[in-house]
Length: 456
Ligand SMILES: Cc1ncc(COP(=O)(O)O)c(C=O)c1O
Image (cartoon, rainbow, N blue to C red):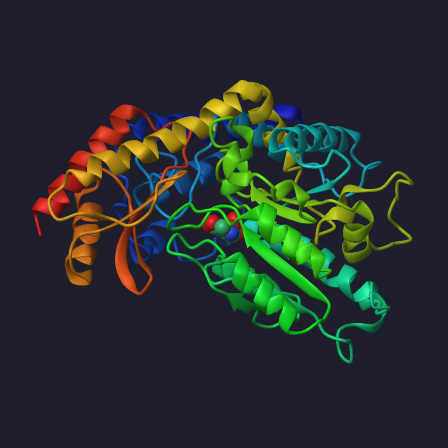
C-alpha cells in the first residue's frame, strides 16, 4: 500500500473538519438530532463487504453532523468542557497518523522525548516539584485514580504491608478523608481501588474543606490515611485551604492528593496563583489537559512527587517488552498501550508559551467575572458563589423556575449552560473553559440568559 493510499480518506476528513470549525460561530450549540435518528442515519446493518474508506468517512461525517453538540464553541459553558486549541488539534491529528504506542521509551523515542519535555514544562508552570513523575492518562478520573493508588500503596507500605504482593484483604486498612464537596469521580476512583466510600469532613459555603474538622477527624483514630483535597469546586470554583490542610494531614502521617482537574492551572497565572498556594506541598496531583489547557479529549495528567511510589503501584515486567533501564512511560499510568497524549500537550504549551497560558487562564476567569456582573442585573437572579475562578452558579427564585430557565436557555440554542443541584437547591452553572470564548460570546450568552429568564 502506498502512502497516498494510506491517507486516501484524509482530504474528506479535512474538508468536514473545516466545515465543522467554520460553523461553530453561528450554529446552535445544542444538537439538532437525537440518538435514534442518528442510528438510522449511520445505518444499522453491518456492510457485507469492504467499502471505499473515503466514502465511509464522507458518510460518517454527513450522517453525524446534525447530532454534534458545539462543545468547542465559545458559547458552551456546560459541565467543565475545554475546547481544542488550533495547535493541539493539528498535533492530535498527527498523533493519530503517527500511531505511536507510547508505553515504552525505546519503542518510540519521539513520543518519550515529547513526554519528557511536556512534563517538565507542566511542572514548571504548575509550580510543582521538578523531580515528580508525570503520567498522561485518559482524564481527571484516572489521574485521581493514579495518585490515589500510589498513596494507598505507600501508606500501607509504611506499616509493612505490600499491596502488590498481598492485596488488600487482611491489610491494616486505609482510611480516605475528603471534603464534603469532592468531585463524585473521586469516590469512583476509590471504588476501583477497593477502598470503598471515603470519610467526608465539613465544607464551608463555597464547598471548601474545613480544616478544623479535618484535624478533628484525623485525630479521632490513627490508621494509614490518604487525604484528598480539591483545587476547583465544580459549582463555586472554590479551592481547599491547602497550606493548613496539608500541614495537618502530614502531621498525621497522611498521603495528600490534590484533585485539580480544571483548577490546578490557576497556578500558571500570576493573578490567580494565590488560589493554589500551598498545594505544592502535597504528595500527588491530578489535572486535565482537556479542560483548562484546551487539548482535544482525552488527556488527563497524573503527577506524583515520589516517582518510586507511582512505579511501585503501576510498574510491571514483561519478558517480551523492551524495557528501558532509565524507566518507561507506562510505569506512571494504569495502561500499558496508549496513545501519545503528550504530543498535543506539547503543541499547546509551545504555541502559547508561559505568558500565553497565563493569559488563557486569566481570560477564562475574567469572562466568568463578566458573567457574574451581567447576570446580577437580570430580574430575580441570585448569585450563589464567590466567583474566584471560572465557575459561576446562580438561581432564579424557586427550583421550578430555575429549572425552567435552564430548559428555555437550551431550547434557545445560543449558549449551553448546565442545570445542577447545589446545597439541595436547583441551580444554573456556567463554566468558562474554552480558549475561544470572546467578550462578544459572553454578551450574546447573557442576552440569551436574559431572554430565558424573562420568558418564564
Ligand atoms: C474537580 C474534578 N475532578 C474530577 C473530574 C473528572 O474528570 P474527567 O471527566 O476528565 O474524568 C472533574 C470533571 O469535571 C472535575 O471537575
